[in-house]
Image (cartoon, rainbow, N blue to C red; front, side, top):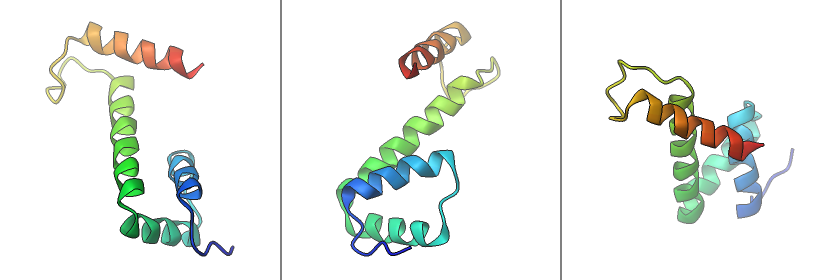
Length: 87
């Protein structure tokens, strides 16, 4: 349970894990504390979050979606490329 002085490396691991599972309460607290004090990790967390949102958005393309002005075929090509890069 002890996580004093959370390192940037451990912070990056927790950020990544937080997309796959809910963090334990003390992990969330230490993560938030580190992000408040470390601008580099805070910026990284925002970028990772943005990428996650883009990926989720592209994984469910819709013709009616006006938030991204790309043809559905282009969205699908981007999604397919992202899926291939994960394997």
